[in-house]
Length: 382
Image 1: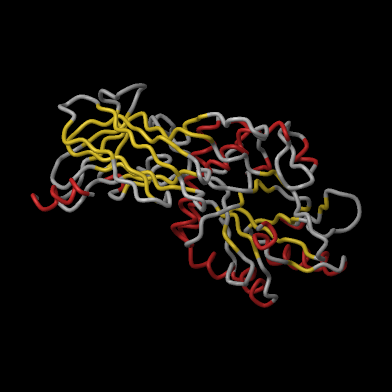
Image 2 (image 1 turned 90 degrees about the vertical axis):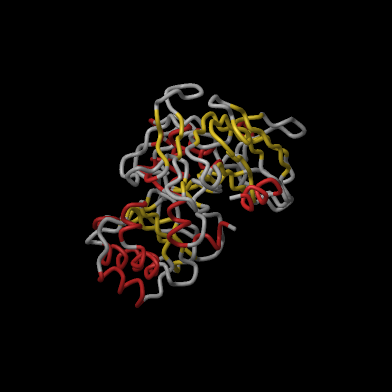
């Protein structure tokens, strides 16, 4: 114990139905959504579910803390309503054994070369608050004891030139008992809002096949993708992705394929406030990163329903593009939402259903007749 303490001390039509900032011709967000040149960006709290008040989305893992990943899971971490610092609830962590610090973390999207202040109110002994991934070494803020009350921990950091996200963590210490956390903040300028798009600007003769949800995974669709070497951008929900991650790894094995973000619960985000939208997008991002090893950079809003808050929530989760589509070949359909046949850069939506094999065949035939080939989406968005 003494050694550990010593170490511690040193350690489309649908699209246009929504009033949102449009993407400009140069691929940036419209002026209304940008910080004016030379202006100082507003300071906001970028932490997801900072007060532990946001309810868990439908279909979320049982016992998960929205916006947070706790190493001990529900065995150690729980939202409690007993004497929070403010609001109705706080996070209480009870390390399950002598080898656990009860760490809870989240990824926070940031701007490079920018100064931020991280803070949290904590209660307990040897509680730590820190940030990694800044591009610079940063010791944690910590307290030996809060004397049974609440104490604010604060640390200030400046991101490096390549930093786009940081890892925010709170934890206790070995054999020091339970601790509580509330009112977490990461104060500084938010990332620029994500760009909304229904197609990809390109003169290359390519289209993009995207497939949503993931509930029905058929060997026929998997075989068609493999036989035709189709680059597929999958937008599965965390629950089916977590049920059968090997399937999604196989169907996205072709070069240019990827797995991206589609929320936790497939909710209409336009009906949710920004903080709940951020939980939906960030928690799905975390699941896809854990399952497939790469953080999503594209978000597909369920029902193509989004608003200005969606663009900011997505950016706060490290998402660069909020993508709908301009053609639908799901469930036997063949709808192109612009005049004429498919065009270069068109995004085609389909779904993981029992009709997907024939939907893919029909979409591929439509692309062929227009002189187009499927290509990797993320390759064209870089």
